[in-house]
Image 1 (spheres, rainbow, N blue to C red):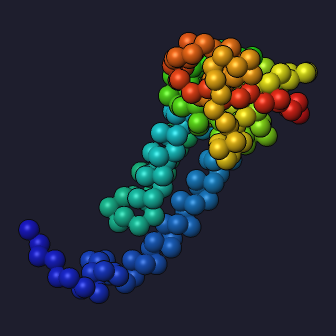
Image 2 (cartoon, rainbow, N blue to C red; image 1 turned 180 degrees about the vertical axis):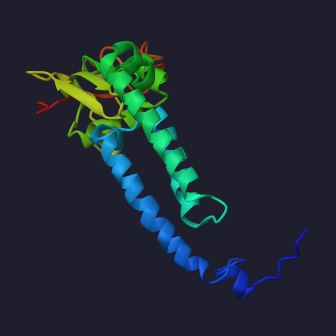
Length: 226
């Protein structure tokens, strides 16, 4: 085993390569960068702006192929260019399958999952997406939702975004705008009480039949979601 000398500046900055290899690195970048940009333009906007799980894995592979070819002397440029071309070609085949076949889109991209129905969080939808109600509330706030009472339907899209459809005349519901201190606890028998976790209205005392939470808060009048 080679003995490593700490703070060997020759090793730290240049390694075992001769100084002229720095110029080769510049040449490698000048070849690989335009080649990769050309192939990324071939992919198109969809694959760059909305990455599915499969595409994310392809980007990781692409990053390895591009990165290693820039400075690893044992990686020939033609080998790296072929690897990059194959990785992006796979992405193009996947994208074509998604565009032509609905079944392929469902398998690769997934489907929208209902997470709110009539101002109440659908716990089965959260379980399917492996998120909690607090994460969903954060996504809703980013869409300008202040109160679950404003939401008639909400779906978590495959892209990770949430799509919201509001009531024409919103009823009372669970406020989700911080601070949570204004969500004052309420007696479950109070007509205006709702579950403090999922927003279900009219739940009796004890565990909520929808999510199992025992917290009850006062429902507030919801503004109309625009």
